[in-house]
Amino acid sequence: MLKWQHIEYLFGLGSIPLLGLLLYTFLRWKKKTRARIGDPALVGQLVKSFSPLRFGIKVGLVLLALTAVILGAANFQRPGAMQNVNRRGVDVMLVLDVSKSMLARDIKPSRLERAKQLLTRLTDKLENDRIGLVVFAGRAYLQMPLTTDHGATHLYIQNASPDVVPTQGTVIGEALKMANTSFNSKERKYKAIILLSDGEDHDPEALKVARQLASNGVMINTIGIGSPDGSPIVDPATNELKKDDQGNTVISKLNEAELQQLADATNGRYIRMDNLDDVLITMTQQLASVEQKSLSDAAFIDYISYFQWFLGIALVLLLVEYFLPERRRQKLRLAISTVVLFVSCSLSSSAQKENALIRSGNRYYKQKQLDQSQQQYEEAVRKAPANATANYNLGNAQFRKNNYNDAANSYGASVEHSTDKAMQEKGLYNKGVALVKQQKLQESIDAWKKALKLDAADEDARENLQKALQQLRQQQQSQQEKEKKDQQQKKENKDKKDENKEEQPQQPKPQPSRLNKQQVEQYLKTLQQKEKEIQDKMNQNKAKALNQPEKDW
Image (cartoon, rainbow, N blue to C red; front, side, top):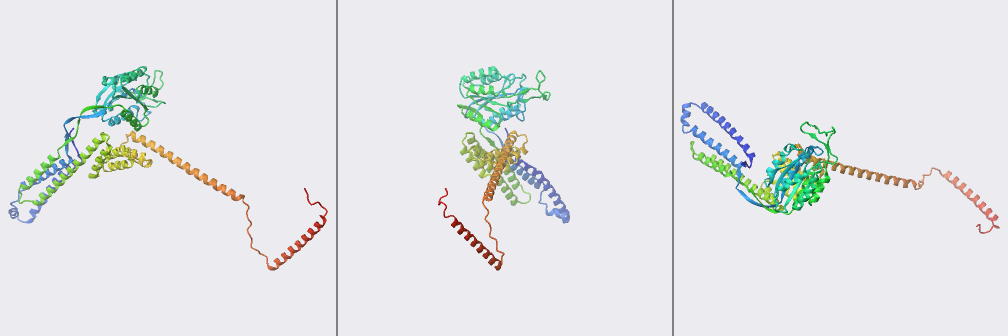
């Protein structure tokens, strides 16, 4: 596919008409000035060596050269020669249920749309595998045989709908047979099926077929789409809820039991579609456990660039303009043009080096050589810190190596330096995932909110945002409960301390005396008199008690 590598540079072409308008304005001013100088015949004699035609040609050559420089900076490319590329992978058949029960909306926006989103992202992760597609409802149809053309896979997945299968129902057994016909019957390994369905109708043949496929070395992994509680179905023809023969609203429920049996019968895995990222991780890990074989495929290895042709044309035009006489050689203009050409060549050469590093990093990344890919991306970022693609790919490599903090920073840099909304949205989404891995919930929430502002249809960002908000509320509630408990404990300790303080007897405080000297003397005499009376009574009692026994027990 032909393309411009740096399409944003093409906006520079808008400066060409502006320069032409500026030149036209200058020539008009020049003509008016000549008329005001003096006698037209005398002025004409003075400037007779000047050629307006040659001047116009020279200016036109400069403008054409500038146009060629801008086109060279944008770098026109075409795909290189096709070569056989050897890779290791497995054969994966995607089996998608497109019956009307998949239109239920217990999973937003619908079961079918969610399944298509999952398959699109899953095929991006299976870059080394051959992929085929079978869709089924009341009948099964092979949409695409096994191929490494994942772009075609995306196209068929997006076009899948109940309309492609006229007969409704859920014949899982027939769909599994159809998928099996795409595999090499002489091989007893390297084969896997991923079945996405709500299992609405119980197909008694499905389990028998699954056991037959297991004996042929096929692994069936099943993904349940829907909820066990069920949901009504909106009929797309009438846009009303679907009714049964008795007029009751049809409630479609996820049949997990059958999907679990199919996976168990073939040593596969069953997982319910609750979180798209969890399903992707589980399925990619499960497929990685399948023995892989060498696959041969024809693919583009690189794009051929033609920037040097445009710069060569610009150089030739400038040379012609230089040697075309107007009145005398204009060395200053040549020097300026040479500087412009040199800078343009330097920029294009630098851009080529950055792109070569990115492509090299991509190859290492696909081969799962993360250290090497990260080195290439880091070198590209060092040469061009504002390269959004280099920063984004560096974030991917860092994330795969669990360097979540560095990955979040790299994704942030890609968002900052990108002018493409799609790139910004992907960078913000991935940044949110990297932040939540670090338990930075509020920052991840901010990132996903910004992503949704750029693409309100991103259900993954919406779902992750809802979960992060719920988790943040739980943390805040736990923190509030802890603070409330601490305050209650402090209050109890204070109350207990106050009780202990009240139980202790209060010591009387000495009061200052307010008696004068005479009153004190009178008070002492009274005390002495009472003491004497008490002593006399004690002596009398002692005399009376002489005849009493010594012990009173």
